[in-house]
Image (cartoon, rainbow, N blue to C red; front, top):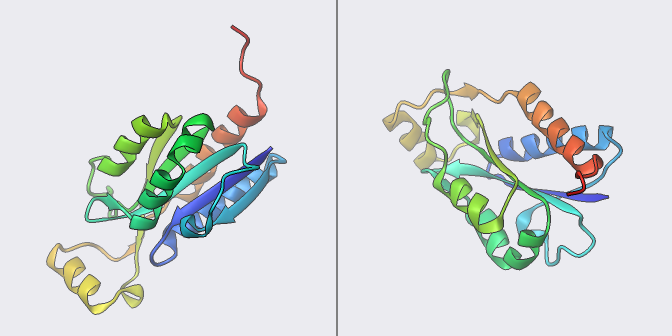
Length: 167
C-alpha cells in the first residue's frame, strides 16, 4: 500500500507535521511518499492520501486548495484524511474549525479532518506577517503536539492495514 502525504506549508511547521505523520505510517510498514501539493501531477499508484495545510486568515493555502480541485475526482475514490495546522496559544486560538477543512471533508468524502496547533517564529516572518501578528497579539512559540499527531497517524495506519468488515 502506497500513501501520499502532501502538505502546504509556508514556513515549514506544517511540513514537519506531515513528516511526523509519514514517519509513524512507515513504522506500520506502509510505503509513504511525502511531496508538496504543487509537485503532484497524478495520483496514479497511490492507495490513500493525507492532505494538510497551514491556515492563514482562516483559510487553507492556495496550493492545497488547488491540489484538491485538480485531483477532486480521484480523491473522491481514495481514502483521504485532511489536517489543518494553525491555531496558536494555550489554549489554541481560534477555536473554530477552518472553513476549508470542513468544506473539503464533505466535497472529497474524506474520512476525517483534524486540526493541530501551529508554530509562530518571528524570525521566519516577513515584515507584514510580523506586523499582523503584533496587531492581533498572536503569541510566539511552538504549540504543536507531536504526540497527538503521531497518535492520529497510528489511527490512520490501523484503518489502512485492517480490512474493512464484510457487509
